[in-house]
Length: 102
Picture 1 (cartoon, helix red, strand yellow):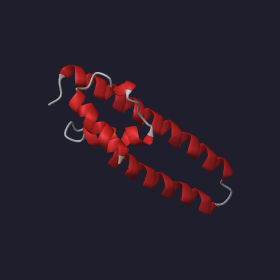
Picture 2 (cartoon, rainbow, N blue to C red; picture 1 turned 90 degrees about the horizontal axis):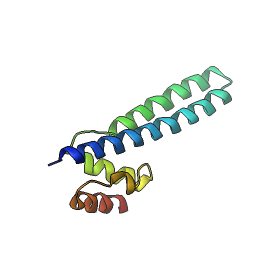
Picture 3 (cartoon, rainbow, N blue to C red; picture 1 turned 135 degrees about the vertical axis):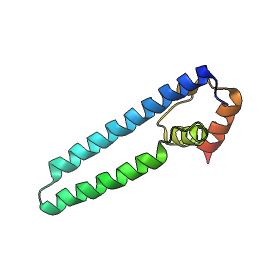
Protein backbone atom coordinates (compact mmCIF):
# COMPACT_ATOMS: atom_id res chain seq x y z
CA UNK A 1 0.00 0.00 0.00
CA UNK A 2 1.27 3.44 -0.93
CA UNK A 3 0.48 6.42 1.27
CA UNK A 4 -0.30 9.79 -0.32
CA UNK A 5 3.12 11.14 0.67
CA UNK A 6 4.83 8.07 -0.81
CA UNK A 7 2.86 8.50 -4.03
CA UNK A 8 4.21 12.04 -4.34
CA UNK A 9 7.80 10.88 -3.76
CA UNK A 10 7.31 8.05 -6.25
CA UNK A 11 5.86 10.32 -8.94
CA UNK A 12 8.69 12.84 -8.56
CA UNK A 13 11.40 10.14 -8.70
CA UNK A 14 9.73 8.36 -11.62
CA UNK A 15 9.24 11.54 -13.66
CA UNK A 16 12.79 12.68 -12.94
CA UNK A 17 14.28 9.37 -14.08
CA UNK A 18 12.14 9.33 -17.22
CA UNK A 19 13.21 12.90 -18.00
CA UNK A 20 16.89 11.86 -17.68
CA UNK A 21 16.24 8.85 -19.90
CA UNK A 22 14.68 11.03 -22.60
CA UNK A 23 17.49 13.58 -22.37
CA UNK A 24 20.07 10.84 -22.92
CA UNK A 25 18.03 9.51 -25.83
CA UNK A 26 17.80 12.97 -27.39
CA UNK A 27 21.57 13.40 -27.16
CA UNK A 28 22.15 10.02 -28.77
CA UNK A 29 19.60 10.78 -31.49
CA UNK A 30 21.25 14.10 -32.30
CA UNK A 31 24.59 12.34 -32.60
CA UNK A 32 23.15 9.70 -34.91
CA UNK A 33 21.39 12.31 -37.04
CA UNK A 34 24.57 14.37 -37.41
CA UNK A 35 26.48 11.32 -38.60
CA UNK A 36 23.76 10.09 -40.96
CA UNK A 37 24.87 10.24 -44.54
CA UNK A 38 22.87 7.61 -46.37
CA UNK A 39 19.25 6.51 -46.62
CA UNK A 40 20.26 3.36 -44.74
CA UNK A 41 21.33 5.57 -41.84
CA UNK A 42 17.82 7.02 -41.68
CA UNK A 43 16.31 3.55 -41.34
CA UNK A 44 18.93 2.60 -38.77
CA UNK A 45 17.83 5.62 -36.73
CA UNK A 46 14.21 4.52 -37.13
CA UNK A 47 15.09 1.01 -35.90
CA UNK A 48 17.08 2.46 -33.01
CA UNK A 49 14.15 4.64 -31.94
CA UNK A 50 11.73 1.73 -32.19
CA UNK A 51 13.91 -0.37 -29.90
CA UNK A 52 14.38 2.52 -27.47
CA UNK A 53 10.64 3.07 -27.28
CA UNK A 54 10.04 -0.60 -26.49
CA UNK A 55 12.75 -0.55 -23.83
CA UNK A 56 11.40 2.62 -22.22
CA UNK A 57 7.84 1.31 -22.28
CA UNK A 58 8.99 -1.90 -20.55
CA UNK A 59 11.19 -0.15 -18.02
CA UNK A 60 8.91 2.71 -16.98
CA UNK A 61 5.75 1.12 -15.61
CA UNK A 62 3.96 3.42 -13.18
CA UNK A 63 1.65 0.88 -11.64
CA UNK A 64 2.01 0.83 -7.88
CA UNK A 65 2.29 -2.95 -8.01
CA UNK A 66 5.41 -2.55 -10.17
CA UNK A 67 7.11 0.54 -8.76
CA UNK A 68 9.40 -1.24 -6.30
CA UNK A 69 10.81 -3.31 -9.18
CA UNK A 70 10.99 -0.25 -11.43
CA UNK A 71 12.81 1.78 -8.80
CA UNK A 72 15.17 -1.12 -8.07
CA UNK A 73 16.16 -1.23 -11.73
CA UNK A 74 16.50 2.54 -11.98
CA UNK A 75 18.58 2.72 -8.81
CA UNK A 76 20.83 -0.04 -10.13
CA UNK A 77 21.31 1.87 -13.39
CA UNK A 78 21.99 5.14 -11.59
CA UNK A 79 18.88 6.82 -13.05
CA UNK A 80 17.68 7.62 -9.52
CA UNK A 81 19.42 7.99 -6.17
CA UNK A 82 18.57 7.00 -2.63
CA UNK A 83 18.00 10.68 -1.91
CA UNK A 84 15.26 10.87 -4.54
CA UNK A 85 13.47 8.01 -2.79
CA UNK A 86 13.54 9.60 0.66
CA UNK A 87 10.05 9.52 2.08
CA UNK A 88 9.26 5.94 1.09
CA UNK A 89 8.77 3.45 3.89
CA UNK A 90 11.91 1.66 4.98
CA UNK A 91 10.58 -1.76 3.92
CA UNK A 92 10.10 -0.48 0.36
CA UNK A 93 13.55 1.12 0.36
CA UNK A 94 15.16 -2.11 1.57
CA UNK A 95 13.49 -4.09 -1.22
CA UNK A 96 14.40 -1.46 -3.83
CA UNK A 97 18.06 -1.59 -2.69
CA UNK A 98 18.09 -5.40 -2.85
CA UNK A 99 16.73 -5.33 -6.38
CA UNK A 100 19.26 -2.66 -7.36
CA UNK A 101 22.12 -4.81 -6.15
CA UNK A 102 21.19 -7.76 -8.37
